[in-house]
Image (tube, rainbow, N blue to C red; front, side, top):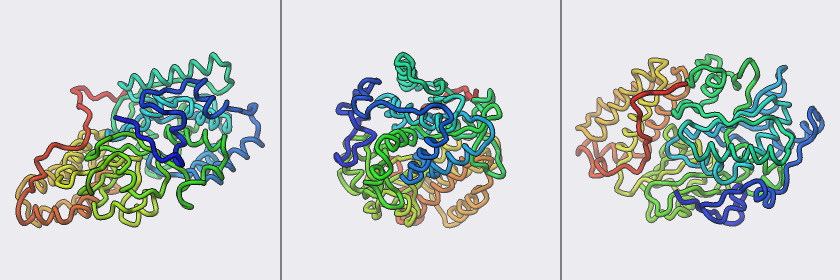
Length: 433
């Protein structure tokens, strides 16, 4: 992928990157942002000011859930045992590239954020999780850790670890379970507690981009952070843009930027038939709605979500039903196999979608699909099946005209076109440890 630059006013995370091959070592990083200043351990006054700054900034997690960062930090801080900080750079979404970008271009920005969080919590360690097989990203983080050690930076111990490269392995309870010596499977949590544990200690699990934003807020302040974006969704965010665009890559945009403007930065040629937002567990935005601002509230008003910062433009003559069927099939294969909604529900949903996309559809087929979605939603051991349900429902809404065409005339021409989506190869042996 090519790295794309946003307009100068929104360049923050990408500061200092003038070429797609640039990587800021510690000296280059400090030349751009200055050195990181950490207080001594157990400085309650500093911790209070740091958390207050995050709260004032309005920063929310950039990993998909969008939970307020300061609130998450406060809850962990209230626990009795010293916590651990977990950097989630797993990048399970096949259409996303921002974790890899941060790891290989500005690793110290992520590590600064992790160091700040660790010091505010008096954390015992920082675990940097990079998916197995992502060797370049893991080496870049390891090299950055070594640079910091040579520079004598006094911070919590860093360790780069590599859990299995599975879609659900990046879920926070799966990461904690693997770090505890178990399998990288999401845990069944009937009460949905906000935070997992590692070796009995509370674990603060944050996405790599969230931590990079933390590092910027600590340096430049909450007012600076709120200088772009919207009142409810301040700041910038990274978006991986692909599909029917001339220059796919990573862009940094202010939240509230119209979806069409973000696509234009990647060289979109014509209005797409639809836009996949938030990854394979995200939502489809109808082509008629591409003027919608890219922020949670605006997208929520049209039934969509920002998710993990992904935009895939579907060609004008593409078939959203066929693309959704492909995603559903792949997501069924990525199941942890721990509950009925995943083991039995997702494959049947994929079958139903394949019939809608490629077969001769009847109204009863659509009714059957809706019934299946209703029995799956909210009943899984983790949120994996919920993401598929959300995606399928959004596709039926965004591509209603296509569905009507398939219903009355059979498959459209776009159904057999080459997919604009990326699907990692599936190995014969599934690794969970």
